[in-house]
Amino acid sequence: MDISGDNSNVDYIKYITKQLPKDLVNMLALRDELAVRQGALSAAEAAIADRDAAAAELAAAKEEAAAIKADATKANAKSKERETAVGARETAVDARETASAKAVSDAEADLAARLKACDSLEAGQAKLTAELADRSAKLDSDNAALEARIKAFQQKVANLSV
Image (cartoon, rainbow, N blue to C red; front, side, top):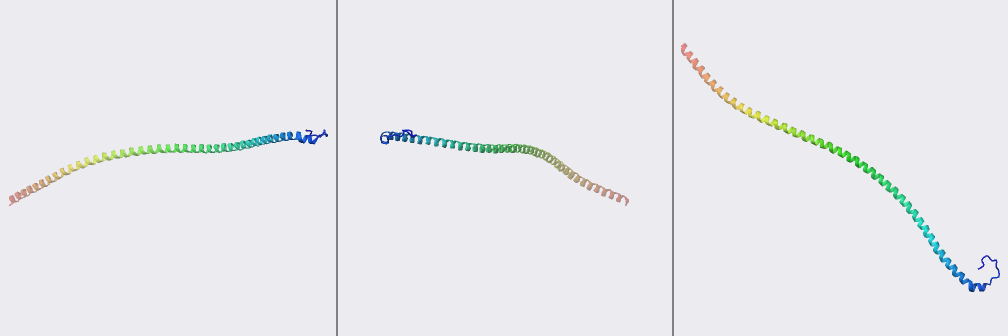
């Protein structure tokens, strides 16, 4: 086939009958191959576009993961601070509880000692009260006897004077 047109004595009927079908078959094969290559190119372009989109999504996911990690780190630090503060408070509460329990046990021991002393004093006072009652009764009887003796003496003195 003379595409440039340098050879002008071409027999078109011979070309149409013999060469054209071969050229058409070659052109159809070229068209099919071009379609396959065009499809391969568009698939490659689509793959490149997908790869770019995946890279963008990966970058966004990495940024989001970094932000989540930063937030988690801050939350972890805050929870550790709170844990330390709670531990300190718990230690202080335990110390106060121990001190309170000691104070209560000391107060109970003091109260028990005071109750024992009060019971002892009460028993002593009951004994003294009984002794004083006995002495008072004896004193009353001694006074009555003394008055009787004084009256008898006064009568003797009155009898002597008469």
